[in-house]
Amino acid sequence: MPRILLASKSPRRHELLSAAGIAHQVIESGVDDGQLKPGLVSPEEWVAALAYMKAAAAASRRVSIPGYTQPTEPEVIVGADTVVIDDGEIIGQPRDRTDADRILNRLANGSHSVVTGIALIDAATGRRELFWDRAEVCVGPIPALELNTYLDSNLWQGKAGAYNLAERLSAGWPITYEGDPGTIMGLPMLMLIQRLESFIRSSI
Image (cartoon, rainbow, N blue to C red; front, side):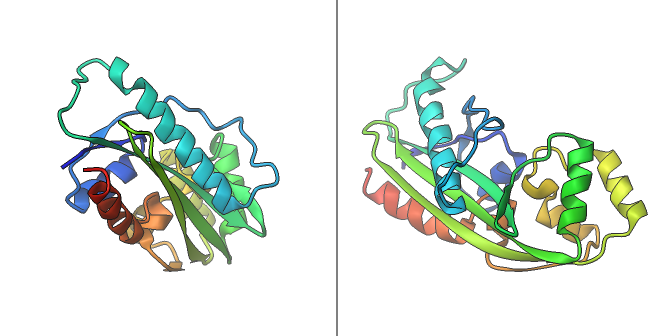
């Protein structure tokens, strides 16, 4: 079996792969997409492009990471990126507490989409596959005290749309959704498992 490298520092993506029984190694891509703008492409094309940038960067820098050993098996790099779309506007990760407050107040009492893009790269050949998945989320009213407590916790940091689905459901927030919950949390696991298995079969 190939060695799976996850080109993401997101603990949620690591947890999703681990929960699915997919052995992998985490490797940060070094890509900071905070200053990048999507231009005229669709949200789906944008997240797929960012996922590929991260996977490609991780593929090129993996050999310089301390402790890295050249494997005897193939290596497959998995890159991912997630955005929230509200009224046609792409919303990424909040810049600070004020921005997180603005985003969550915007998403409350309404519905939005979450799109996650995935890139798979065969490190030896450069062969790649890009795809994405979309889910729909509805958020009810969030009491001001509860919202402020959440903002003070800093749990919004590094999360597209300033929230993590599983965490907020556990906290009792009024959230419903349609689609793969993994898509909302950073990896569309239902689709990823199938695509990854097919990609691996063609890489061995």
